[in-house]
View 1 (cartoon, rainbow, N blue to C red):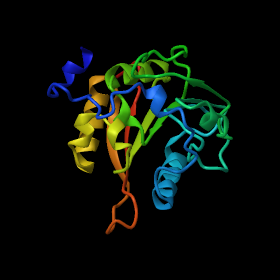
View 2 (tube, one colour; view 1 turned 90 degrees about the horizontal axis):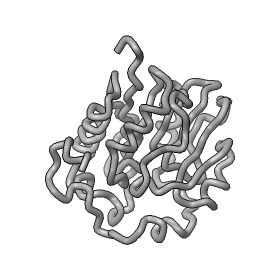
View 3 (tube, rainbow, N blue to C red; view 1 turned 90 degrees about the vertical axis):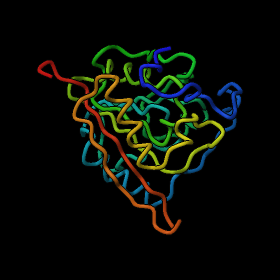
Length: 214
C-alpha cells in the first residue's frame, strides 16, 4: 500500500465508521463546520495567497468556500460528496462528485489550475498520498495548495492517525504528506488560536507545486 511509505503504524487510516462514505454524506449539511473567527482568518489568508483571476480547485468542498467576496477568479472547480451542498455554493463555476477514498484520480488535465484548497477535510482521506500527488499534477508550477484545518471533525470518519494527534501533530502530519508527494516551500501558518473553548483554532499548511528549476 502506498501509504506505507509514510512510516505510520498499521491501521493509521482506519475509521471508526467503516460504512461507505456515500451513505454518511448522503444528507446535505448546510452548516458551517468552523466558527466565525476561524472563517474570517481563513478568508483573510485566502485573500493573500490565492491568485486573483486564477483557476481554483476547491477539493472536498461544500455549500460555502470561504473565499474573499470581493475577489473574482477565472474559474472555481468544486469537488465534494453531496450534490445539494455543491449546487448551493454560489462561488463554484462547476463541480463534480467523487469518492477520493475509492478513486483518487482527478478528472482534470495536467497543469490545469493555479491554486487548490482543502478546507477542514484532510482528516478524512485514507489515500492522502495518491490524492495529493494528483493535486500536484493538476497544479501549474509554483501553484499553492492550502490545507486548512481546525480541531473539529466528524470523529467517526476521521482516520485513526488524525484522532491520535493534537493540533501541532496535525500540522506535522500534513507537512509529512506534502513532503512525500513532492511539494516545495511547505510552511505552517497559525491563523486563529484556541482560547478557552471560545473559538476554533485555524491552521493552514501550504505547499507549492515544484517549478522546473526545483
